[in-house]
Image 1 (cartoon, rainbow, N blue to C red):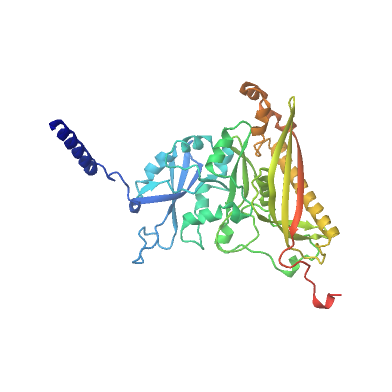
Image 2 (image 1 turned 135 degrees about the vertical axis):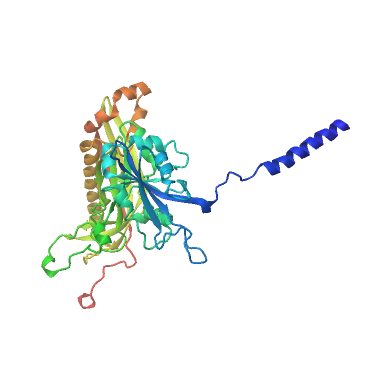
Length: 430
């Protein structure tokens, strides 16, 4: 009896002690935290780095006062010199009252100079940082990252974190930025043999910030006989526009190993997404086959995402891309009726030809010119070897320039927009 009483007594005391001894004593209140939304990294002056941290300014309280003292700003930026990110954050605490944290970071922004030099030392640290999430978006900025972050001034959103989410959503961008450009995919590609890593291309617009951006409309500059340009054939930082937000996300940055090798514009990035089997629904401009000076627009979607087949005979590798697309005609300036079977067939063949030519140009540019496999062809080629030792001895990178490829594209126009026929003036209707 006494033994049972002792056991019960011990259990009660233990449970009671747990209630009082456990708790959230080591918890850090969100009110005491400073959330780093974006990290910018540049080359430092002493073989180190310049780390720039964009910190979200707390929202206005009910009393109408900002709890962070940032005035009308939604983000504040500071830059410190350091040999690594952890030491730079620790140094920043000397003048930032709240505890800095990376748990809500949305973007890692690499300055152009550092990107061309190589980012492996930076990546080696990031993979070990517990707060740094692998879902962080990878961005390559033209110029210096510390200057770029000064231009992050959202006008339509008060929440800078939400602004980054919307800006970097591939569905919102219509395929003009890479679909998979997170830190996880980036580091996996860098660590793979012969594979090229991809990041989002972004650039500041000082002219937009100063109100000096201009689109010429002078009569002397008008050319009624000019061929209409494809608007997605532009790069971030060079888009013809005016406005308020002085940054642009448009195109891709391609890395060979861990070093930047070149940029892709918006059109090339769409083709890249298409060949990688990652194409989202997007508005795509094409030359009108009925009038080469004019463009028409299609809402394009993958009827079936691209399939990649590999043929290997000895050291000769052939990659075969099989793509099936469908589209809806949403804008046409000519009076041609594309509902008619012969006109529809002419349009479908023209779009297939344009896509095929653009795909071959991109493959030549990336694989043969830059010697980079940014399509993960290596993941299929490795399966043709019987052992890892044979694959390592093959040295995939050395065979890229000799690789052959085929692109088979099938396009079908499914719909014709809200109005079936072309718009025609009443006096011209016969």
